[in-house]
Amino acid sequence: MSIFLLLFGIFIKALECSKECELSLQTIPGFNPYTQHDSDGKACRGTIELPLCRGYCKTSESGTHTFPPRQQNSSACVLVETSKRKVELKDCDEGAADAARFVEIPHGTVCECKSLPLDTTQPPV
Image (cartoon, rainbow, N blue to C red; front, side):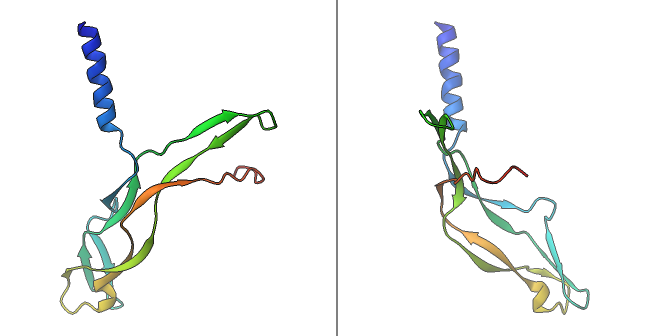
């Protein structure tokens, strides 16, 4: 009975760890804080978080009676609608120009699973 409970606990923990497609924000690796300079060399610094879609999407494969002998249905977790937004870097050198003070980043608020069209006419790169 204890083996059953152990396996059941592992199964439940695995369900908690795996997440469906969801939006999260992540800082840019290696650029924390992000620094931007103006033409005079004055800088502004700040932490920038980019929208990131993560999680799993269902993928399936089924056999067919034609060539190729299978049909694959794949999807990926992607941002649905994107736009750009300006973010102000607040930690600036005195006299820094607006060119260093603002940065445009991609912006999105919704992630969902979208089908991947697999182009079989192009050879792999």
